[in-house]
Length: 191
Image (cartoon, rainbow, N blue to C red; front, side, top):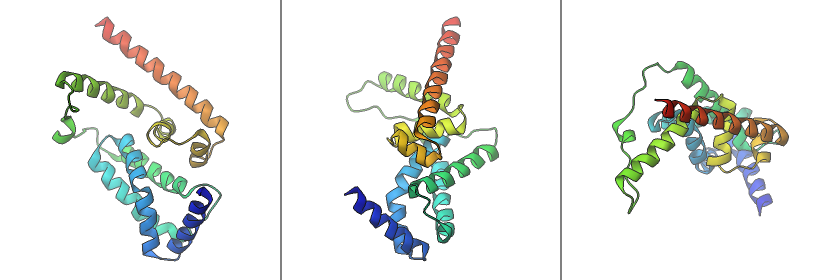
């Protein structure tokens, strides 16, 4: 079955690269949620993630006639575009961060006490803030691993690294995060 999907995608890519808008629409439908999630976790802002996701697919549509299959998944090409746009976004954004009121509000899960929801949300936000301080390749690795659920081999193809290099980067990243979390605990306890 996976071989059939791969053959179908190759045919869709071929048609899309020849200007078939319907074929490109199929690619869009297949990848838009994954690209949005990746960008959202890198930016932390729904509106910016929506804008950047649209730009990824605009750029992909413009350049798909030049797309060449190099033995890596098509998604690797999209993630590379997304990675570059997010890097530019981080570089270009102003120092003053705007937070929409809708992003500040978190509804409690059914049967969950509001205080529990607040604590869970604060912990998640603190972890995301820590992750966003990591170098972009480490952020990308964590998102592909934990949000998208890719294997080390798949991540290696997307990031143009060997599976061993991905495992090593993953290990170093988790150690760095652990050290940062331990550092936070010391700061909090010292206050």
